Length: 273
Length: 293
Image (cartoon, rainbow over all chains, first blue to last red; front, side):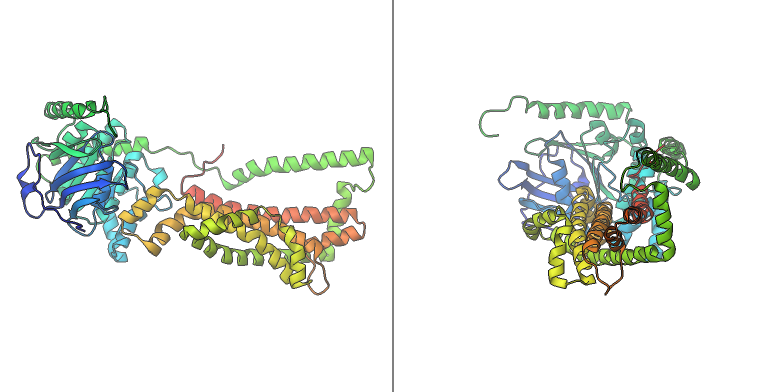
């Protein structure tokens, strides 16, 4: 999966985790730059290592190229410069919308992921049951996506992503469209499943508290172009409560940095934009 | 599961189960089949009864020339039915219509898929297909006669020219309407090429494709009736269009009305008994159809 390789040290870490400097990273971005044609630079020299089993949240305002970055890691697009390396064949990816196939039931959606991976019929059935139990939807496998609530659909999407058996799970604002209490519940659920499965998670969000609630490390991206502005280690024991003082304190700190990043765009400087 | 996760686990599971229960729509059961039938059949039957009533009143009061009363038409229909001519014509026309439609489907579906796959070809031939779709297919009858003579081949030629463009366009529209997100999901899950087509593109395109089939059938049936009116010969069976033309030549006005009504009823029956349930089934399964109250 690596294209042109420019070796470069991980930079700008104000509280780096030792794991990210280890050799076998689950995701390794080195000097990744992306622009579409002659358009503006979307991502500028982004270098990031995610250790196996680590939970990293990518945080940024609009225009920071979060989704572009995930597409690169998912292998749906190629960087203009730099290299992207991902452990395993293919990263699993979850979207803001569940993107379940509406003509299949919840169980069939999960099963399709297994089938496309070449899992045999008998094993598929057992594995589907196990995954639906993991997301606590064992009783809803026969339902069509439109018969499920938004939170349930995202859990099916999570089960489907886990069915890919990838070492890396990418999540693109997966809870952005959910109401607050459902989101809280899914935060707990995701934390629990991450503990159980031991998958590496790269989670994109623009919600600071969500990032602090979930991540072991929060990476703040600047906007236009997207660059790594700051990194924060989150040393708060799991399971965390999103309303806990520790989460709030770090969130305030990060929000100040994020706000400063956004303010820089209030008065666009002269010259070409 | 480790340490502190276990403590909150049960409460979390219950909270989640509660949310699931609250947020899952409580749906009223679908009304029973007799009830649904009554709800759609009763108004439709009343409408038809009203038309027949007005018709009867107008004929009895004004007694216009060459306008048969409903009773006369009913008599003519019974006669035609008992003589065996009408049922035979229905079967003959339906056979032609269905066979022509199936051939159109077999030709048009791959054509649509190829055009969808090759954008250059589509830019070249897409407008031609759309243009053909708006051409009344009766316009093909003279050419059909010159090429195929007074034979059944002329019928099939006219049906194909009528139905193929509709089905090609239906296939293209169906594929155009596949949400890009679903294609991305397919890629993420590792589906490409024919696997992607089989598991994502084709099922996602199904509702649009069915719409195209439905329109294709309507075009087939209309084209066939136009052709049967014009192309008549003892060499092949008499279709409904032929029955209609026979009645006209005999100045049999009730017979003409019987012909018109039969053509209408057969077209409607295929629509109501085949296409409507098929489409509803697909849409309902995907939650795209709301039961009317």
